[in-house]
Image (cartoon, rainbow, N blue to C red; front, side, top):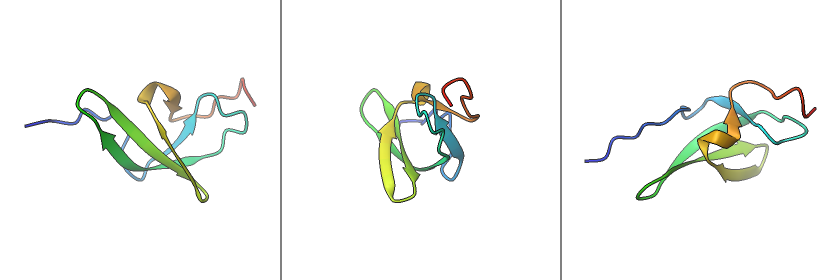
Length: 64
């Protein structure tokens, strides 16, 4: 049996650390592979998959 150790929850608003616009994104899906967990994020009609180290709960104001 596998137990997910997710850092972010579905429905949570997050930001991509490298996004120069710092658009808010919603976690809407976990993607589970054998040895890794990715988060599918949505902003508007755009979706993308990311590792937890690419994501932050707060805006990265340095890149803005």
